[in-house]
Image (tube, rainbow, N blue to C red; front, side, top):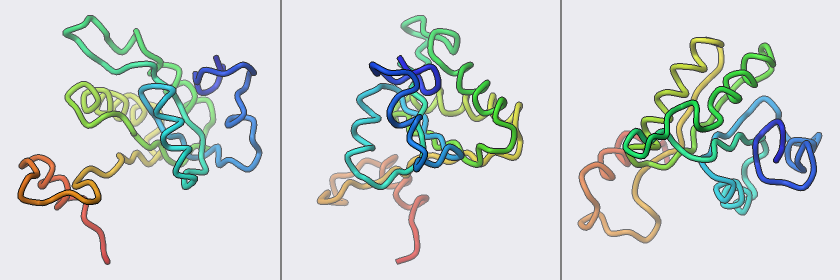
Length: 147
């Protein structure tokens, strides 16, 4: 496991964390190592990652101490002002939202200057609007951007 990002790897630090061309000032927080692979497939993200290995799930006795949130907070705090942005890429379900809210509160309490963003939510490409639920449509409207 990588001591920096907690991703599963054979070397420490991992290939992504040790790559000098990656932007160490942008950390994308994901729930599982497989999420890193999915984002890497796009070829669009040039920052680094932090893998939580789960999400806050009180019904299954998984609290913030059972996943790698404290390591993330220490990582952001320990870098001074070098981390400019934390991208929350947790799943858009109840556990992922709770985890994102908790991380936001913890990171902001340690470093108020860091920008915290969330992956956009909305309609998938090829979807029909008439079949979308209210939450998805609401998020699509809230996350709209100029064309």
